Image (cartoon, rainbow, N blue to C red; front, side, top):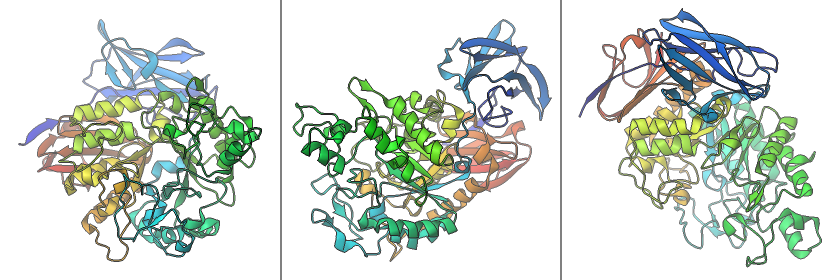
Length: 601
């Protein structure tokens, strides 16, 4: 059934360059704070409410008219590292608060105030980057290192499917290596990605490698350090950055630290862990697992080993000769927390300090499936893996006869069915309590090595798959594509999604690949998508739309999951179609699931 909708504008502000004269001010710098509203939206008076030294202060704003909109602005000196603010809009005897959740016709608390961070510049290169996630054992193999396979690893043929959920989980060995990645860098470059995020590459007791037996070298099964350097040289020629994955919460039971601690109760390593006689193996592990001993950062020696010391793990891999361009931190929300012991924030800030000292241009993003706002205050992680505020809402909105097992990601239930409004609400629930800089520095993803493939979520519906890809590549954040998604690889749950890529027969979905390439190119070359804000202009059950606007460019993105028509009205006088249906009579028309990207004049 077809439906017809119109775009609408409301007063708007976000942390992007159109609304602040400086998005990284120095202490003492005077900043213009602005918001915009349609001309027909009655505003008698506007006031900026800003915390200065913890006290709320009020500054009267001035009105101007530009491009058929009213702009309100005021100049205020920034005096704190973090400035919380919101806008008060008066209309007769009524008033409205404009904060990071949008328009509020009631009084609000400061929990969703906008936040401006002073002096802490985030890596600029990630804003126009697209990452490609590789699970090293399953991407590509040269076969050169199979003779090094530990006896407990179970050899699989390259075209086998992972089994998972049995005694073989974690020890299935397909034999992917870094030389295999190097041989197929051309595929990644042609896709348009300019970054690779590797799940762990350290030696470990499993092929998942989240149970590191050392943090000092690349796993010989992947080709060791020399294969890494070969890959690094080749990737640099193509302008592809390499990013690592680090388990700061735990190591593996094969690590020298836990071995020394078990052998000698007087060893310094004994203090690296949490001990409990009630536990069968004597120490706390991640989720109680003996294979993943949890690290105790009350030990100063451990702090120096992991991130504080000159040659710490965090620093070593960010410096020459390895020069990783960032870290993804595994279960970052759990690091430094055990029962009544909570030193999480100090550990997070310590890791950030270590990164800033040796490679301030590197990206620090943490896995945090539930997203605590305190993790993303601007002074710790740059961002998080945005499962909560992107992947899960997209799954709920675009799911179509999903073929997945073991529940909705993070919740033991089937995938819920979301309306467009519920999708946007979930996204704003994530973005509202954190600084804009942390929001746009978070990793957006449709799936990962821990989840079902998005292809399965949409029931192999190619049109819905492309709507998801389009949203991934136009929404604020740093998009990451799990290797194989671009060619239609499937997987019903985490282990099943870690399938190998067929490089021989190449039985790929080439139509999907071509469309994804087009979308990646738009992402990589658009000033609005790298530096623009986010303004929602439509939220209906089956269709959503938003604007991405920077000083250089304005883009309109419209996504539908059913037959629909959207009247663009006065918002759009001239538009160039970059992707999707051509506009007809100033309207977007779709016969089903579809996404359109338009540059506005």
